[in-house]
Length: 190
View 1 (cartoon, one colour):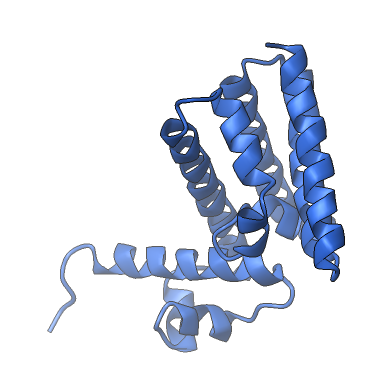
View 2: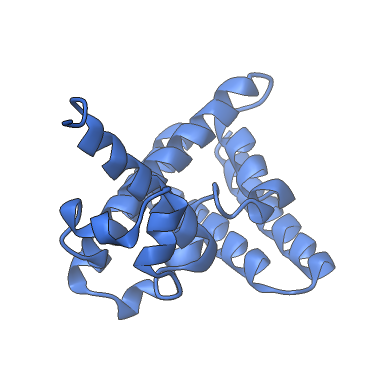
């Protein structure tokens, strides 16, 4: 009996979602294809009917994760109408909640340390997705590109460091310092 129309696309989306969750939490190199497929409720054998290789999956997962993060941050901004959208985004992005929920959080800090050692194709896709994220933040803030880039550097760098340390008090201090600096940038332009 054949699968219903759209089944293969639906399965592919489940695999990409599982990969994005795994890469956000553990990076690319520490995650195996069987682990990703298991997270999607599938066996390893079906992977190659959807993707040529792991690199193709990394590229697709990165695109998915950035779209997911942008959607999440837009919802945060929309929900907090009592403050400027960029302020709501910064406060959420540099919060303990976002830091601790790596599986649904921003993928940029998770991959930034290892992306330079991956293939040129993966690096190109990461670069494009970083640019897309920077464009989103810059547009929401109403900044010029240079200031938007500086703001994203603070946000992503702070989150990466806050997730990396094993001292929760120190991690909270890093988040607070990054948030304070990011909010000072937007205060200059208000």
